[in-house]
Amino acid sequence: MTCRYALWILAGSFCLIWTTARAVAQPAGEGPAPPSNLVAADHPGDNGNAIDLKWTLSGDDNPDIKPRRIRAYRIDRTLVDKPLPDEAVLESFEVPYGVAQYTDRRCRPSAAYRYSAVAIAVDDSVSPPVETSGETRAVRQWFDNSRTSFAVIAGGGRPRHRDGASVFVHHRH
Image (cartoon, rainbow, N blue to C red):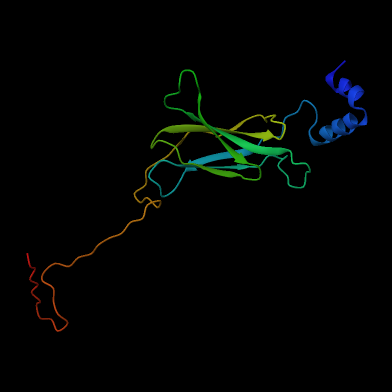
């Protein structure tokens, strides 16, 4: 006797409704559809510590499906240059459902990374992973748009009055 039938005997018609609703929301034994087209690229105009990620949402991430099937997306980052002996994934990030982009701002400049993404269903089942086609590196740019810059332009020589005459400034000590 399976757990589903044991619940049916104990809970009566409530179990039938729950089982039917669950079967419509997610077929038994199947995880959610995976995201697709995962692309990673260097984030423009930064100091070399960010990579932009974009993907196509899972086919199950549809606001018209009630109840929602997808809870989040998990992005895993792996270091390509020097993989860790016990742990291949350096860090994982969760992105809420309906979002198809993420900027990883915790990269080391010039380190090579590979990314993978999975869709996570509301029951915590996971889709098959989709991976980037190759490695991506965060590159330091000449201009860092994340910082505010300013310039001071100073002219040489003595200060001059409006009429062009030299102005002498005396400072008291």
